[in-house]
Length: 278
Image 1 (spheres, rainbow, N blue to C red):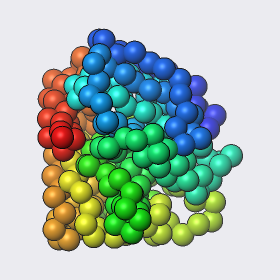
Image 2 (cartoon, rainbow, N blue to C red):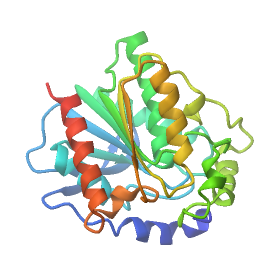
Image 3 (cartoon, rainbow, N blue to C red):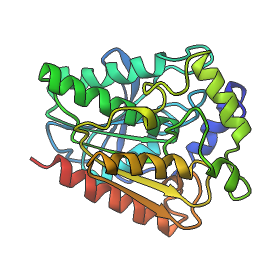
């Protein structure tokens, strides 16, 4: 996790998530944003999931995350588009957000009637930012409102004020405050980290749809979930944060290895199906 130089190695790790049986993958473009479609057998019509991948805004790709997104797609019977949003430092804020918005609006233009937003790590934070924007657009312009959001180990505070960054530093084998600080600086490029458009912890929670969060106790971003969920709950958002004892960052990607990963994916699927049914 040391910046853009490690993109190849990072993608190799992400591709170790097992391929989901029966899912086909297709390169595509939605709203002008390239990415990968994950199609389960007999997908439900009129429904789509927009998946925003992790990588601290400097790493990750739709191709590398297709297997994790495919695991969600097969369990929900919903075609899932993994957006290849632009990365820093070549493309700092607001490039990633602009691409996420364009992909969502592209799904709407295609006639998609129900859209759920899913993301992990930085993509989880980006998903929560997009959730608020898409909900606001729906209220103001009559667009399609997001049906729900699921985020795994979301990065909600690029100002890095969570106590778990220090308290859980010895428990996290993947992330450090130093790595996150470098990534944050690369993405922000001088922009204010407390801006709700980069840190959803500081944003509006008005009228947000249902949100499900999964996070482990052995990760430095634990408080990014706890604090976001606490704020959302105080604003009467239907939010549920599942805190998994001993699990590390984005542990559902370890499906096939960890029982907790299988259990979490099952909970994610049940939640998303309940929110996207006709």
